[in-house]
Image 1 (tube, rainbow, N blue to C red):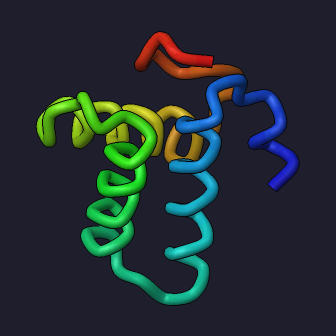
Image 2 (cartoon, helix red, strand yellow):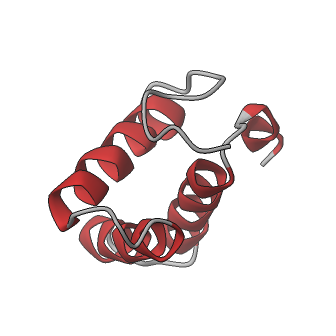
Length: 78
């Protein structure tokens, strides 16, 4: 979990943490992805479903698949 400390955006950190924890407790990939997409849209209700899906997928890939540090490309919030 210490890996999430370098994530500056609260929404990005929330999404990555939620996805990781959902997978750890046995949620399948699609269910965790859908939950995280909904979570992103709570943080950003102005975002379209497609935008939310794209960002969530990019963040999961960046932080959990590729295990890269720092903020991934995404929204412009803090």
